Image (cartoon, rainbow, N blue to C red):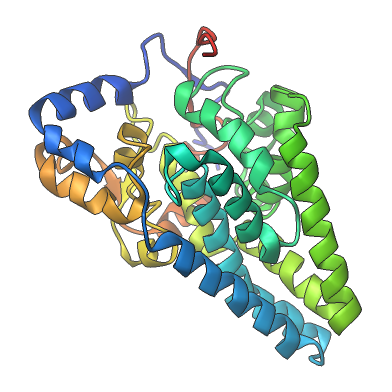
Length: 322
């Protein structure tokens, strides 16, 4: 490893995030894109089907041996749960019922949260708005790894461990980087979630509960779908801080791969993001994008120039709350 090249800091920039200006330019040239904004009428039915599929799975796995519990958690249930976290991501932008029905969106996110096993949706909403408003913002965007993560997880083995432990870092990092007061919705989210966990335990025993929670932890860690965590904003090419992916895994992830388009137009539901790319093709076709999330994970682990430090950071002023 004699010629190892490692990063010892983030890529600091002193410009505004690129999405605001590109959004203005695209809307000026293609005002019809505004018609794509608004709720996705199919989202609530898709999510409901996924939730009830997982409840059926809880019944079906209650007699399985532990090795099959973890196998199906990783191969099946965790894929659904990861997909549900991305549905919650869309719902956090009010695309299930529209901006005028904010409470309906919040409670539907709690419903989508049920198979995940751990309360998640309300906390995600609280921090995700900052990820869009202050992309790469120092001490504001909790999607950015900490200095410790960048310093310590710098070898292939350590980076692999970091990928496996991603759910832990995503859960704890906000408490260290940008702690916020617990909201009433977070308390309600937890009460509902733990009540359902207890009901499942009472009806069918411990194995279905472990099936749900293990699937969440395993598939948010080292799993092909989790390649999107790295693909979205890790700097594979200097000067580019957001990347899209247009491959088949978008079918399972509510088009989260259309990430450049999503940050340009966060109020457009995932199902319509391909139309954004089609309408404003000249803005997206020549931007670097990923071909495979599995290749993203491979490169992240084994490319010495990539690691948790491979992120753009900037200083952002707090916006005034309306």
